[in-house]
Amino acid sequence: MIDAVEGLIRRWPALAPMHRRLIGPLDIGVVGSTGSGRATLCRALHNSTSCSAVVFDAASDAGNPQTDPDMWVYVLVGGFRAGDREQLALLPADRTVVVANKVDVMSATRGLPVSALWGSVTVTSDDAALIGEIAALDTPIPRRSAEFATDDRRTGLLRRMDRAGIIACAAEVTAGRLAGKPDELQRFLRRRSGLSELGAEFVRRRGRIEDFRRRRATADLDLVAATSPGRLRDAIESVLVR
Image (cartoon, rainbow, N blue to C red; front, side, top):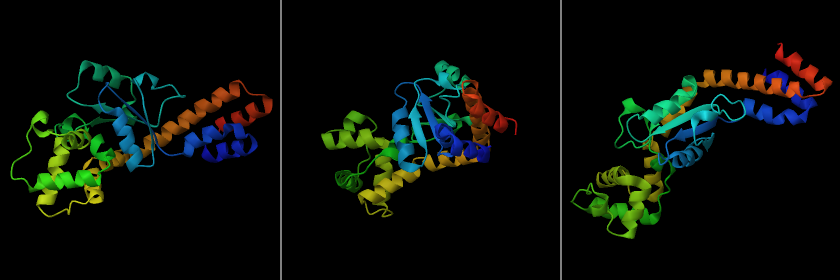
């Protein structure tokens, strides 16, 4: 299929977008309820992988060859609700990964644990200094956000790294496993984010993705052939019968 499409493209450059969809980087659709962290997960995927990730408002585009991506990632922030089940029922099970977007509170049995915050955060020198101050304290970080976020620095750090991320970084600094430099704290969080495990899940489904891409290319070619002049139509039909 790929070789045949490449031959068509050399003769009809208008088919080039179809070829890019057939051989290009992994295309991911991120879907979930409002406030689930879909946009943050997209940023994290862009930061950590070579894939293209786009937020979808709903799963209703699944099955549409013009909008259906290679893989779907469904984002949970709690237990499965009725709305989650309805949306997941619209997605192709063999090309959908469910992720739990808060590794500090979610069980792996509810979805692959992923922290989009940790995967997308940029740790600044001010952040690193504040984590060093927190690591030097003998008192644990309060569970209530209002008790911890007593100034703008702490509020910003909590919003971008969450409580579990702050605790994890401070513990590494306290134990001497990290010196507390911004770049190493950032690498630590991204390693712990679960994005590597999500990437491995994409790799495990490579065969299904390749099958889907071939089916999508066939559908695209059928659509073009139906509205194309004779020579292009004949060339496409010669590819489709192989």
